[in-house]
Amino acid sequence: MSDKERLGFEEALKKLEAIVEKLNDQDISLEESVALYEEGIKLSKICSETLESAALKIEQIDQKNGKEAN
Image 1 (spheres, rainbow, N blue to C red):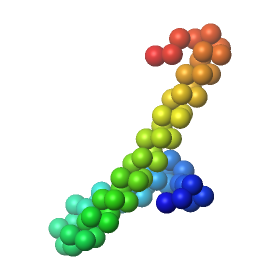
Image 2 (cartoon, rainbow, N blue to C red):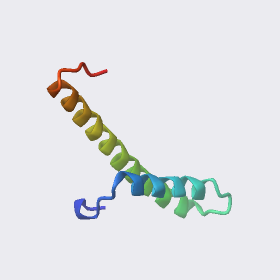
Image 3 (cartoon, rainbow, N blue to C red):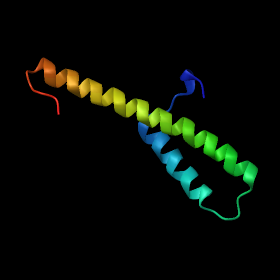
């Protein structure tokens, strides 16, 4: 997935949840499971990076306004 195709947090999370559901399906092939797992890892990274960025931004806002970050 290129930077141009980066998904928003909500969309990435929704796709990740759908992958988890598919992986829980017992009628899925090994090849499809591996492909879904790989896609899930990429989506998980997008979600994680987005959350980290949001947390940093909140911390910066709090510091700018004289509040201690938790």
